[in-house]
Image 1 (cartoon, helix red, strand yellow):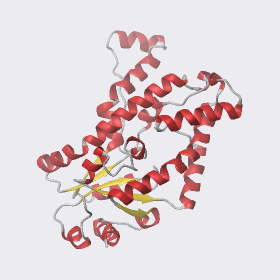
Image 2 (cartoon, rainbow, N blue to C red):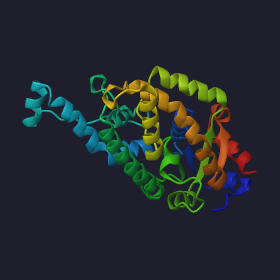
Image 3 (tube, rainbow, N blue to C red):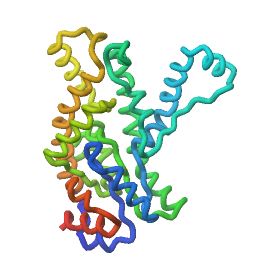
Length: 284
């Protein structure tokens, strides 16, 4: 789908965008800002994954842990307590906790096969949540009267579509209805993301081939058996590789289907007008 001229964008009665890029560069911040104006519907792909498509997996995992505690086991078996997750747009910890990290079980690690099973569940859930974007555009308008729509994607969107195939069916369908906008980070942003991740490493979704290769390389370099790997050490080691792996995939998505804005430019967006103006400069 051809990109709209800048004039058409600025004068449109309805604007619909899909924000993508690495987590931590402003996708959710920008989405929240647009939503808080009262004129935009905020569709969070990660929230949809964690509630609609992986909610039962997450809750069952909590229950599995609770069943190890005698008091909670008794209460669960008598339906005396209710256990669920409390995912929000800004707190996706229950989802990342379920994904987990591979390695030493004494340090909270999962067997690699179980880890990959959960990764596969996330892949299916992310594709389904992205496919829900177009129906949610209609729901947002029909139910709530929102004409403007922002799809806040997870950092792994570039892993579940083929960014190098201009005929990728999922991305093609999305681009028919929303304007894809890549938030590109600088080298300084990348360094800060790595420092932030090093302080608090968290589970992420990775493309299966990339992840298997990373796991094999890590085991070969460290000489460790699978059940002796420090889970945090592995995901720290993998994260920097993931940034390098994803950057050309994001770039290809933007070149084929959308536009690119920098994280510095996004930091200066304070309202709908400045957001509209920023996108217009890219369409020009």
